[in-house]
Amino acid sequence: MKKPVPQKKPVPHDKYFLRSIHQEIDLYDRKIAYLDKYEQFASSGDREGAENKLLAKRASLAETARQLVADGVEFNPADLPRSFRASAATSAAG
Image (cartoon, rainbow, N blue to C red; front, side):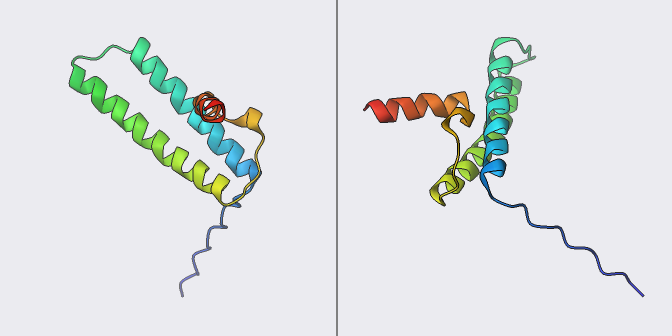
């Protein structure tokens, strides 16, 4: 007799989920900046590999955040990651 495997509850896609995604994007932005400025690597290939790994994770989070905003999830502009604020300011000015 096997016990049924409990199903995971779906993550609610609300403003709090979007805020946590924005916080993760900001964390990856800081990690990338630290990597560029302070991290020592044996070769430039190692550096590029580490940077590409972080950029790929950040890109997937950014795509999820943009999709949630497109779906109409409300957010506070103060919760935006710094990298999003810069692009929003240039698009609003232009």
